[in-house]
Length: 344
Image (cartoon, rainbow, N blue to C red; front, side, top):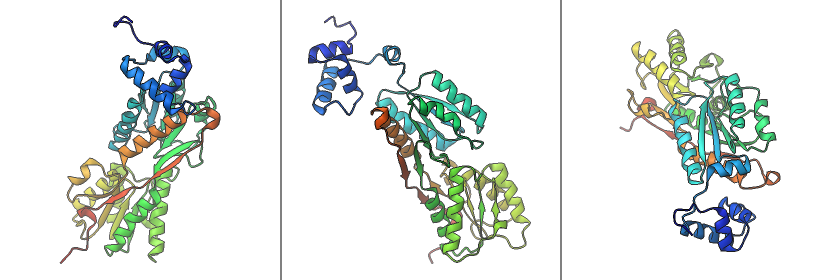
């Protein structure tokens, strides 16, 4: 063979005395191809310096070896890290990744899904926008056989595979930590309860109080407080209270930053007067004063798991697919903002 001529799957098939379709399936790790044949194909492909042609693949199958990813905000460390995890696994499997952001808008998310389907994506990974309470726009993908994996913010009603952390136990452990520090009047800066992650975090907060025998005070739950600005607003309301909380569990690190800023500016000592725990373990948590305790969401691992679930679904025929529900275990990173009890 001319060394300058591009090697095709037909060349591999001829050498192995098999069909091009068998070679193609072996290269895609299809479960119906034997391990012996897969090994032979991969070894020959490496020996003959075979590289897949994405354009030919697209024309032949109507697919472009592309995974679409939709996130609410690209400028958040959490989502950037998840995307990095998705890319690392997808690229190793020969897929490229197309990323778009909904900017928290349902209408924009719906249009992105339509656009990505027009581009013949093979699979779709989605973290829902804050406005999304109607999931019908994903039916078009699911009905076409395009696997959809929701991650982090998943539908309240299950539609397909999901990858998430255990937000309830993460919140529960964070509040238990505050209780162990001697705190009994614990406020919660909550997120929208239409979004699964914030609903679960509030439930974990409530359960921890209940298990500790602490009465629940609805006036200490500040709804829709997940941004820097809404965190500051919650801080101003807390300052007006005659009986202020001795701890605050925040559903996100940005709201934690906001409430910390307002309280400290008004002479409240953290953690001596008010202990604070956030959620997301943002990079800036270690550098604020005092360093912020926060829940780590295993961002990269989540992204890798999302891609693995998508690739698994793509490797089997449509009728053989089963929805996966992967629940990852988060960890609480304890820093100075929440430590009231110190070793003598």
